[in-house]
Image 1 (cartoon, helix red, strand yellow):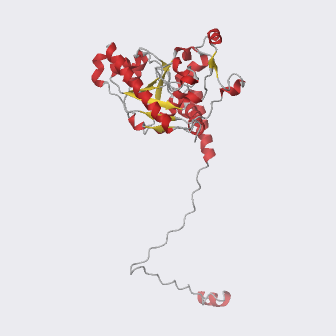
Image 2 (spheres, rainbow, N blue to C red; image 1 turned 60 degrees about the vertical axis):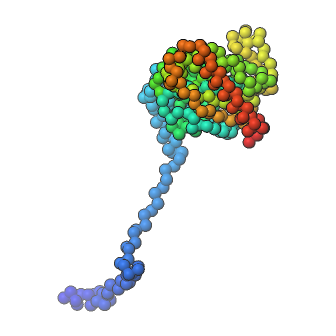
Length: 325
């Protein structure tokens, strides 16, 4: 049987089968039509929680294996950015509703000394300043705080403070940090500032002997005054139980509207509105030879103090309601 007879007799209909005529191509503006690209199925976005879980496990693996770095002062950048900063940012953003002004006055690189007013019973202003620097600065710079000796005599607090980048408030450490290009934060009022009564709020205390100025002069780094409004209302001190403070070996024992009456609940800060303003930097590179001149040091310290005090008055006018939006 021939192939034609097979198709005609055994496969009826196949002999008359013809391919369909393709539709004529539609020309676009006289040009050949652009062939259609096959539609690819959309790629599913990675699950956010899966990514967070993977990042968290990788973080724990590095911590347990010791695959992380700390500098000579004990600063742990990874722990600070992964743990400390996110926790503090909840207070900074949602509880205190912090607004930051003048961040462009902070150097983009190189060393610098950031000098601020101190208040609020607990040194939350120092912590919020580190968050503001990391959150608003274009280079997301870390601020290395100088802390009192008391902080580094407390077992757990000492380790946490050093891991977060703090070190003892002494000129050699400050000069080493600034020489290596770090931003250093200092609060010359010390315990006199954070332990003052609510009736003395936003009145700067004495700046001591100006040791921070001589450190800046020796390294030739600029001094950036910063004014912080809002910390005074977080734990308003109504009284100071000095006998109890001496018994406990602390600078003061505060009595606030919520502490010690409410016990642990009294440690929750009041949700005051915060404003932080960085003032124009004061250059010191031309004054390095006067680092040991008391007159130059005192005059420069007074200039920094007056700048901060004047800026505080301006910020208080911008914030008429201490607990407003």
